Structures are given as C-alpha cells and as structure tokens.
Image 1 (tube, rainbow, N blue to C red):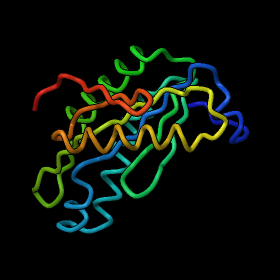
Image 2 (cartoon, rainbow, N blue to C red; image 1 turned 120 degrees about the vertical axis):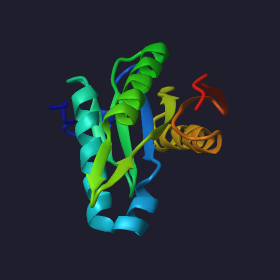
Image 3 (cartoon, rainbow, N blue to C red; image 1 turned 180 degrees about the vertical axis):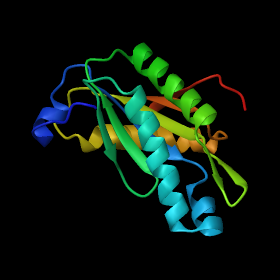
Length: 158
C-alpha cells in the first residue's frame, strides 16, 4: 500500500517532488454505453494497477471524475517519465474487463509536472493540467512533461 501523508503541507514539502495527473480515456463512453456501475468498476481496476505500480513513498489520490493524481516523492524528472511510461503500459496491457461479452479496454494519458518550490501547490496542479490537456490533444495514451509553461512530449506513437 502507498504511504499516506499526515497533512496537506507534508504532501507538498518534499524536495524534488513530481506529480502526474492521469485521465482514463474510455470512462465517459463506458458510462454512456454500460452505465456508471461498469464505469466505476473500470476506475477501481485502474486504481489497483496504480497501487501495484506505486512505490511506498508515493501518494495516490482520486482527483475528479476520471482522474487520479499521483505524487512521486524525491523523484528526478527522468525517473518520473519512466514510472509514467511503465504505468501507461500496464494500464494499456492489463485493463481489459469483459461486460456482457464486450471487452472494455482502457488507456491513460499523463501530465507530469515538477515541483519548483512555489508554496502554492495549485501551481503544480495547473502545470500538470496543461501537460495532461496536451497529451490528450496529441492523441491520448501518452504523457507530456510540463516545464515552466513549455511542454515536452513522449515519442510514443499509437
């Protein structure tokens, strides 16, 4: 199980902390086609994958409808990219559910942002949001890294 912080301040005070937002692509279409109970099952299954890929020092939060927020403590940018790619691959490979004979396959997009020491954690979330938006706009099932208003992309091709 992942480490759980004692306070909001503790979550954001780790030097070198990286954060990523994950958006799971088929959730709305799954909800529309199969209902919210099945959509929730997909999110629970993806959450299990996140926990399995998470280190003891990381934090996983449900953040909005189909998003999760993961804090990777004491993590260099390159290592955060490797973790995001490993999780992306695991979700793509392992998140197939069968409902009424229909295969439901899930992929994920990631926005990665580096903690720059700003005392307001919302800046970090906004940076990750911009990167996540660009990952989704570029075709989904990929990650982007935000670097102080510029964003760098992975080279994964669908």
